[in-house]
Length: 116
Image 1: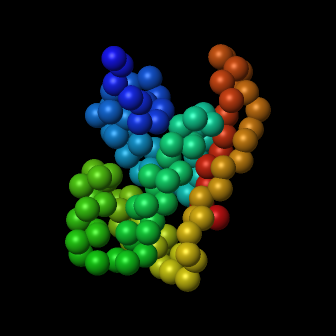
Image 2: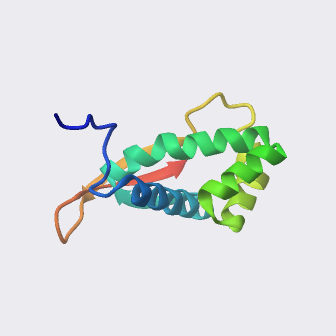
Image 3: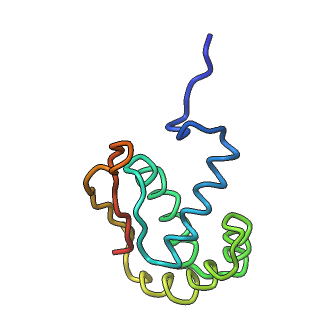
């Protein structure tokens, strides 16, 4: 009997997906918007919103947890110093996904994910 799937794995194993999402989130927090495929954007959205919620609380424990997830101190610093306080009064929905045209090479549907 096959093992039940727990959502899209983006064609990789879970460890590679965690690292890929951490890199996408770090790039998103530094540039405040990125262009990626629609599937990656849909998987990234709850992942990044959870990190922003941790940044809103801003405790030392949350900061250490985010550093252990992202492995990028500069992105974590920007997340806690600029992005977290910006959304302190917002209850959720920090990211927006805008669908774009297909990628020229392989016709993959592209999307722009950005902070609201």
